[in-house]
Image (cartoon, rainbow, N blue to C red):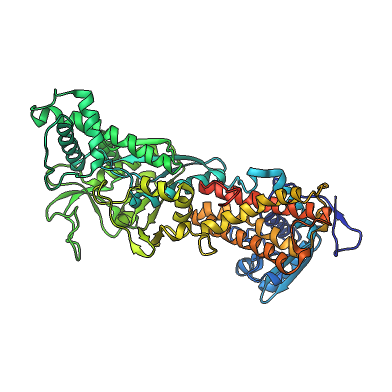
Length: 592
């Protein structure tokens, strides 16, 4: 039992279940109070409460929690918001955890909690450990997250990196929020670019066997194909020399794609990324016709002529009859071609078939990470999935903008070894996996990101990676400092923590809410933002000790308060570790 200091005299209340995080717990309290008002006849039945939320007030001086319940229910209830808020306040004031429920303005309701609620949250964090913040939001529903999906025509470069990190962090966020996640990579191993890759590899194969070669315009010139040519030479010897292209092209295409995918997997592993499914475009086969038959059965395919597009000519427009999908019925700007007049499939038809394959695997939701140059595909792919699934499986497409590479503010020169880009492997080797992953999540995915090699390793407050890692390293140092000072730590007594200490707990306690918000919005950058806020709160608390020695975490003459503050710091450290783990970043114990 916990005593409520400064509250109703002599009252005690049971410690809350650490498995039920504070925000969902109070959301349940509000729901119970509203249900009681309905039962009493004070509110009408049938109210839609899905928009009711419990969140921190914008101004911390207004209290610890706020609910919009009265504001969002007033219209449907046919009542003034303030009248609902007053009734709700009376109900919530009876909760042991609530010190005061106060109605503000036209009907906002602010709650002040007893300090022991926040003290109990420290214990909850310690008890849950790495599971603090895990959610049952997803209820085990299956979701497919497709990301990277780069053509196997070269190694991973920084153009792929951001989508890879954002997709992987999103998958981890969804898993942490209770979804069953499949991480998927779509291998673009069909089409003309793969034939060009095979021809380029054949040149390197000939080079490996001693020929002097010249790389024609339009082939892949990068040195990364040199080891591919050497591997082909080791496998086939000189058997393929002098043979017509028809005899070696398909073989070299298959082997070169396999060798390039080995390298791509290795590059992704440098970022800590391992995907569950690698789906081959070449394996679609009859799936294309199957998907089109499904659309045809719904009356969504017809033969027609598209209107000429405005501005630049669209790649799938021809001024003659084509097989078209009624995409405009599902929110697209126009209908879309599936088959060209010569009978060949459009690229879009292959993408439709691929998403049809995903749907047949039984996912409850799909997420695609698209590069900025694929923005025009969002509406058509969303329309296709809506049509194929009968509007039962949502497709969420996230656009990932480019990364601008800088060195001390100047654009980075391209890599000769790679052909025309900077490889992901080179960047990870220079600054490390954790720096790359963290920086990729410091902005919304749909906004351009600058990656300055000098700034991302700078040890300053302006570097978000350092700022968060430094907070964790400081926390890790506290027990060492206590031991060095010869302090024997008793069991922590949270009652010794005052309001200044508890302000730090309030920020840490936001973590479970952040997880659910990031998962629902499909925005993993929210985690990086939050960790920056939590680190900032900790650094602020730490710096108070510079002006007032009694505010320090380690007090040689006060083992009891030291133990309590170290438990507080440990709780913050645990939340930092949990957040960094979801981002795929290791928490630093020391910084050098």
